[in-house]
Length: 190
Length: 95
Picture (tube, rainbow over the protein chains, first blue to last red):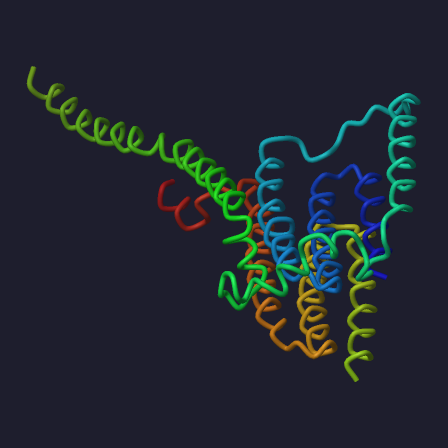
């Protein structure tokens, strides 16, 4: 049912030309996928999807809309070559899914590699009750460290972009405030 | 009991979804998205009870917060055509 909603939303997004409606439908799309993730028992993924997809990206897209036009200009002719490429890629991907194990299959390769060891030994080796936490913080510690470094760098970059302008603005205002009385005094004295 | 509730929520979702798709005016769509968000919150909560995990309620609460902020941002955009607009009061004071 939810997947059907998802498909209809995607088609509607492609068909609509009013970009405001498209942004709204994008929010709905994220909410539907969040619902699907919850039903697949991936609550953390669902939460990220709802926060980023429905919350932040809707707002960011609206901010973009404020800077551009609200209706889409589309070329009316359908170009055959890109359509063909998309068709071939899509069918190749669907063909690839036939080899995948069934959802929730306990004999799937992903559940046979290191997961049993994590489940059996993580309590003894790491001592954290939550297995996911022990995997992230200990078994894949370097990986997590790299991720944190990337996010930290991105945060610094954003702070520099946002905060770089503020002191100058305050300085300009202070200069302007200084100039005003100075100019007035200059006008009176001669 | 919870299954019936779930079904009702799904039907409401379908109705709100139809309004978002057809919606002649922008306000229809905004309201439909807001309703859809509320329905997602209820869906998550009911799903938690359906699978005997009431701790899903916390997640549903956080969804509610996000939904609220999103709706406010959308309405502010629609009122002022600009997300960085200072709002009515400040604009009057400056002008």
